[in-house]
Image (tube, rainbow over all chains, first blue to last red; front, side, top):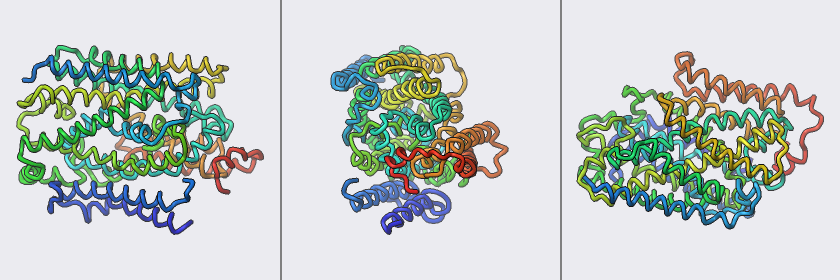
Length: 67
Length: 493
C-alpha cells in the first residue's frame, strides 16, 4: 500500500468517525458557536463534506496521470 | 393566495420544456441496446455529474429533507453525513466496472457479476432484488409529483391524475431517448433545482425570522435538542447514537451499489470522467443545506401541516408570496421527482430484461428484440409503480425500507468480484441470500436485533463472513477461474 492510499484511508476513517459516534458526539455536537449562521452541529457536518471534496481533489490530482 | 393559473401555467411550461430537452438526444444515440441503456459509453463530465447528482435530488430530498429537519431536527444531518463518503467507493469500483463493461459489453451490474462466475442464478437473484426495490421507490416519486400538483391547485388536480400527467412525460422521453434523455433532462433539472433550493432556502428564513442565525437562535431558545445530534426518531423520541451512526455507515455501504447509480459506470466515456464525477460529488451534496434550512424554518411557522413531508408546500401555500415563486417551486419539486424517477424506470426495465430475461432465464433475444423488450418493460414497470401508488393504502416508505437493506448487500459482492481473486459464485450467492434474509428479518422484527443498529449492518456482516468461508471452501475445486476477466479488471492475486 502506498503512502498516498494509506493517508486517504486514514482520512476516510477520521471522516466516518467525525460524522458518527464518537467523533461527532465528542467534538461537533454543540449549538454554539454559530458559523455562517448555522449552529455548530450543522456546520460541523457541512465542513466535513467540504473537507472531503478538498481531500478527493488532492488524492485525484496526485494519482497516476492516466486516471 | 397565489393565482392558480399562474402556478399551473409555470408547471405545464416546465413539463413541456423537460419533454423537449429529453426528446432531443434520441436522434444521437445509436439504435443498439448499448446506445439505449449505456448511451454508447459516451457521457462526459457535465452529464455524468448531474445524472449521479440527481439521485440525491429525489422527491425524498426535496420534500423529505425539509420534512426530516422540521420533524426530526438534527437527525436530518445523517443524510448530509453519509453523502460525504457515500460515493467514494465508486472511485475504486467504477473504473474497473467500466473496463469490464467495454470489454464484455456489459450494461448492468448483475451481468457483470454473473459473468465472472458463469452463474445465471446470481443475475436472477440480483434482478429480483433490484426490481423489487425500484417499484416502491418509484412509487414514492410518482406520489411526490402527484401530491405537489394537488397542493398547488388546491385539490383541483387529484393526486392520481397529477402523477399520471407528470409520469406520462417521463414515459415519452425515456421510451424515445433512453439514458441520453435521462442524462440531459437531469442536467437541465439539476441546475434548475440548485437555483431554486438556494433561493427558497435563504428566502424563507429571512422572510419569516429575519435571517438564518436568528431562525436557529429562536429554535435553540425553545427546543435546543432539535439542533443536537442524533436528533429525534420518527415517533418524536430521541434517537440513539447507535441507530444514527449505523444508519450513516449502512448508507455509505449501500449508496454506490444502487443499480441505477452503479450502471452509470457503463455510460461514462472514460475512466477519468468517472473519477472526476466522484471527486465533484460532494459539491452536489452541499445543496442539501438550503433544503434543511427550509425545514427548520417550519419549526416555528405557527400552523402545522398534515404530515411532516408537506412542510414546504404547506408554508408556501400559507404565506403571502408571489404566485410565480410558488409556480417555480412546483416545477422544482416536479424536477426532483422526474429526475430520479426517470433513471429508476430506465434501470429497472433494463435489469428486468437483461439480467432477469436474457441471463437468468436464458431468453434468446437479439439486440433489436432486447431493445423492444426493454421499452415494453419501461411501460410495465411504470404502470406497476403507478398502480401501487393509486391502490396501495399502506405506507410506501416502509415498503421501500424492506427493499433498501437487501440492495445494500450488493456491496460485498461487487467488491469481492472486482478485487478478490478467490471469490467464487457459490460464495457470492450464499452471502447475497443470507445477508438479504438477515436484513429483511431484522427490518421486520427489529426487537430481535442484539444491539439497536441498522438491520442492514447485520446483513452485511453475515454476508461477508459467508462469502469468505464458502469461497475458501469451494475455490480449490474450481480449476478454471475466469482469468481473462480478472486480467481486464486488474484484480491482483
